[in-house]
Image 1 (cartoon, rainbow, N blue to C red):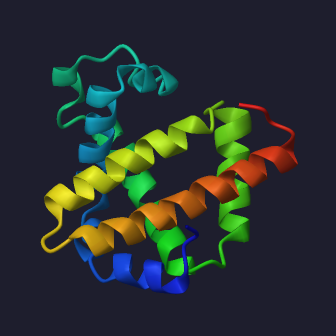
Image 2: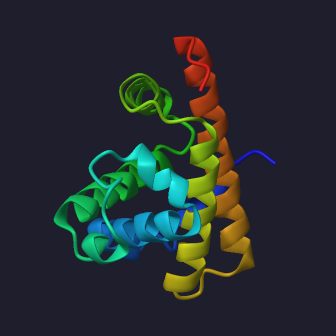
Length: 152
């Protein structure tokens, strides 16, 4: 199912804690990503060789996690008007960071799990809405990768 404006609105009704403290939630998401999919840590050169202990309270991990949440928040607020944002993200992730498309699905799954655990009242309807929005993100990112001629 594709995301609709109502899906974005549903997610945004619960999104305030993440928007208020993007570094905290971004750090949690990245740590969970690295725990559940250890190979994904290799895609982040700054963190590739760090242990779980070294990642805890790591300012660089917090900063990067904050960027992830801020960009996702920007995407949510765009409510389907996200062409330039997605082109810019695709450009950096495809050409500079060399991130395979499948990793957007993987981190999306982690984001849903963490949101369900950490956001009060983020029940099945909100989780479905977030899954729809993240699927839209992945689809648009894939189209941007295609436009760039990147086959990752």
